[in-house]
Image 1 (cartoon, one colour):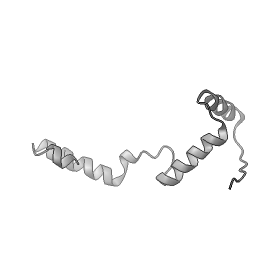
Image 2: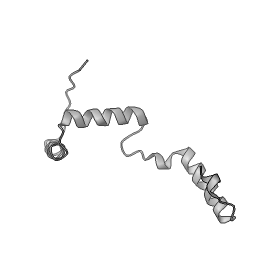
Image 3: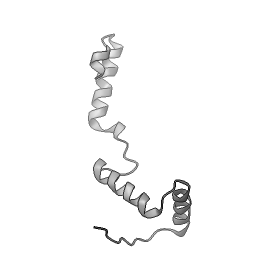
Length: 78
């Protein structure tokens, strides 16, 4: 089932978005649907890089410490 969504956006931003979408072979509705699916699945903002998530930071700190101590091997990186 399809729903209609109306939103307000700066005219310059809409124009740039429309141009980019056309270059990519889609329309703004398709682009927004992609954004919405990603936003829901990630449960974060668009610029919320999951690289900096607490669990990944902990992992990076662990393997960095192991590397410094000379204990890093391919099995500890999985």
